[in-house]
Structure formats: structure tokens, C-alpha cells
Length: 524
Image 1 (cartoon, rainbow, N blue to C red):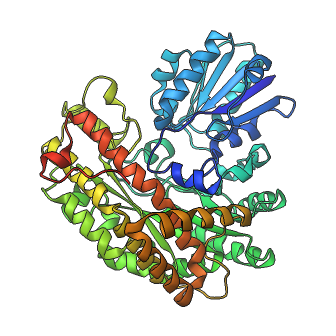
Image 2: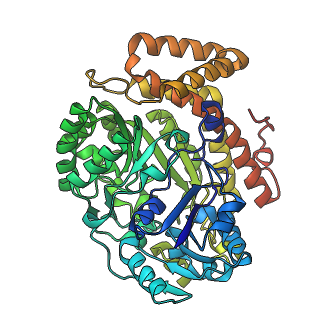
Image 3: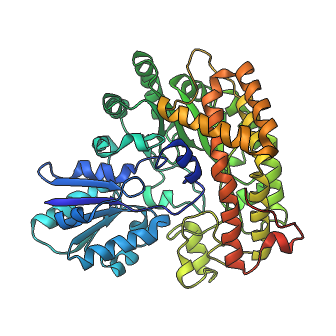
């Protein structure tokens, strides 16, 4: 079988870092781990060609060559995903699809013309698909109500990647999350039991990347890395000597719940193993909204103190925030802004609440007849879409607080100040090298571009750029790579805040900042 594996394009979004990628000479942030794991599950006698269309598109010759097209997608990739299915159908090629989007909304893939739907987790459903292919079946939907034992998951086909085009590589240690947040689709997709790989298994994946020549940052893409704290500590205790033996070739970033701050041993192990950053789902500082959305793990201890403790352990914080919870009080956006400034979180991901299909929130809103009918009933997955349900406070108010918050938080001098303060506040173990690693060739290009744009061209932040850079060099040189990377990412966010404002304006029919009396500022 000649199989063409394609990963659809992402639209410009908070996480796409478009301008950053351009000045760094990169194409994408992280590779698609799911589809290269599927590639490892396919028969060895199959011929495989793989393209991440965010890095390198396939050619017409690839389409002519293949007998089968395999796609994996998230909801945000919907436009390109559907276009690829339709192209395959027009060319008379069989199409198999999987991933979070078709698993959550299988009808969309069927309507586009997909022949095979390989849903849920591939370790259980890919074998069902292969059996159907062997029997000559021309279509099928393959599902499993069980959750696979991830200790049996194969090493992803990292060799298929154009690794130098990515900012970082990706591995997965666990699936699932023990918590019960109402809006989260992770527990509906992967369950509430955190299933982990064996330490030896994940070290074998790291060794594979090491042998392929990768040096730099690694994203451990677990939705909650610390969901099984006993097993994650086992892994970290094995990772620490491995890193030392290999002269610290990688630095790590991951996602975790805020209760990370409650475990001193875990924080210490992560720092010693080479973790430099963690993404936290803070959502809101409003305790009543956290109760409503069942994010109770964020209510046990003061959130500001939790952030400071995580910083003190040497971990830079990225964080997600949401507007639009039921019963939310006016001014939630301003309270989020105040929290971000108090904690100096450099890149707050501010979004408007969406109800993803098949979540507890979706089911409740469906019963209450509050879901919005039509195309918008399935959220785009992007952060700047109005909600796909009727909120409990005026949508115009939520939209204004969102655009105003995003516009203010990513005002260039505000953003650079938070990057500076967060990096200075990190408690670091001095025996390590740079807290974040970056390939030398790409790093030199990035620094040159950064000096031109922020140290020379932009008069309004030029002085701030040089003052802060000099202080970092004097007081905390270990964070230089991390700090420069954050500064460079500002180039993306200063463009993206204008795009977010434009998208909300299109949906509302007016600019919420102008209506609220704010002057119309040009994008950076």
C-alpha cells in the first residue's frame, strides 16, 4: 500500500507564532505527534510519504503516487482538513481520517467524503482499520470504548520529520486528566485516569531524537503532565541521570495543573531534569467562576502565591485565561489583566469560552437550549471567536473586555516588561546551561533580527529593549536565550492582537474599542 500521510494547515492563531517563525527561519512550533505515531502503527511493508503542510506541502506527484490518503486534524484545522478530503475524493483516492476533530465531530468527515474514520485512540482502532483494509472493505468507522495501555504505544516516526524546521520537538508521557473541568474536552477524549508510559519507554524516545541529532527544546505534550504524580516522579528520577550522561541535550516545557505548586519534590525534580517552563490553565482569578466551571483544583490555594512558587522553582509560566463563564461578573477582563500584571506572566492566552462538542458544558447547554445553531455550533478552536452559546451576560460586554484585555496586555512596552520581570524572578539552578536551548544557526539569525526590529527600528521601545537586555546579561545570563525568545515572540503578538481585534469586529459588526470610547490605535 502506498500511503500519503498529511497534516493540515493551521490558520494564524495565538500559538502559530507566525512573525516569530519568519524572523527565526523556522516553519512551525512543534511537529504533529499523533500522525507520526500512527505511521509507526502501519505495516512495515507499506510505502509511506509524510508531509506536515505547515512545513512542507505535498506535490501533485505525491497525489498521483498514492493509493490511500491518511489525515489527522484538530478542530482549528477544519478548513484545510475538509479541502484535503474533497481533493482526494475528486482524484479517486481512498481517504482515512482520525484525530481529535473527527473523533468529536465524525459527521463532518463523512459529509466531506472520508471513507474510513479511525476514531478515538489509534493503538486500538488502527488495527481494526488495517483488518478492514486486508478484507477489502471500502469504508468503515472504527471506534473503541476502551482506553489503550500506552506502555504498548510505539516510538513515533521522528525520522519522517524535517526536524530543523521546527522550534521544538514533541513527546508524550501521559494521556488523560484526573480533574473534571466542565468545558474541557480532554476528559471526554482520553478519560479521567492519567495513563502513563514507562520511564524506559519515554527515555527510548528521547534517545531516538538524540541519535537523530536533535538538540534543543522538547514539548512534553501531555494535557496534564502531573496527572499521575507517582509515575511522573518515577520518570523524572530516571530522566535526571539520563540528561546528565548526555550532557543536557534538551530543555523541556509542558502543561500542568496549578496544584503543581503544592508539591515541592515534584517542582525540584522538574527543575533538576531540565524543565524551563510550564503552561497552566488558570482560566480566571474569580473564585466563583472557578466553582461554576468545576475547576476546583484552582481554588485550594491563592493563585498568585502558586505562580510565585512555581517561578521560584525555576519554571517560567505560560497561562490560559477565559472570559464568558456562567454567572461571571462585569469587569472579569480587568481582573484578569490585573492578575497577569501582578504575576508578570509574559504570554497570557486570553480566550472567550467555547463549548466543545461532547463536553459536560456542551451537554448542559444543550439541555438548557442555549447552544447557537448553524455553522458556529462547532467552535473553530481559535481564541478569538465569540461563544457558540448564549451567555449569561451581554455578549457585547464580553467581547469588549476580551479585545480590550488582549490589546492592553500585548501593548509592546507592557509585554516586554512582563518578559523581563518574569525572567528576573526565576529561581534557577546555576549548574545548568541556558534554561532554553536554541540551534546556533537559528539563534544568530533571531538575535540579528531582534536587534534590528526592537533595538533599532522601533523608537518607542528601543530604550527599554537595551536597558532590559543589559540587566539580564548582568544579573541572570542563564535566561538570555529564554528572554530573547520571549522578546522575539512579541513580534507575533503585536500583529496578532490587531488580527484578534479585527476578527471580533467582523463578528460584532463594530469595533468594541471604538464603541467603548477608546481611541483607534494602529496595529504594531
